[in-house]
Length: 178
Image 1 (cartoon, rainbow, N blue to C red):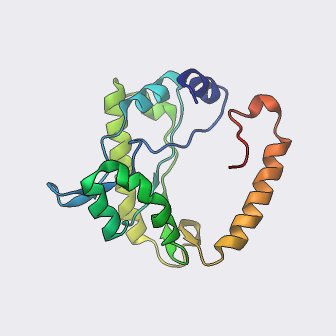
Image 2: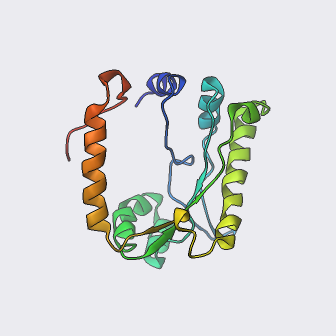
């Protein structure tokens, strides 16, 4: 999707889901931690241009040792390994922390795209502390994959029906089955 289409989409009330670094988190040997690559400040520019609100999502966890070692050899190996990492999460509980919506009014105070994206990164990483506060009964932040096939089937059918009912002008992009 092109930049112009994205801006048009957001200005007309559409939502955009993105991973701001454009890449998967990796093991940084110098810092001895799992971290994201630098977040793209162009995303801050899009937010400023469209005066969009933002909701942050934090996905804790770590990929396998094999994933991390191969990623040290070459960053593209992490991309190649992603399907394997998703499969090995089957039947495991994934915790997701959803942040509070950040209105454009709140975000407008940041003068540069870089300052805005740095704030959003800090805001997102602060969500990891909220996960530790949540209990197992906090079902809104827990996705159980044990019935993955059943959930996938129901969700896919419902989603396909809802997409089919959308007016053509509300569809940003469409692709055929892979």
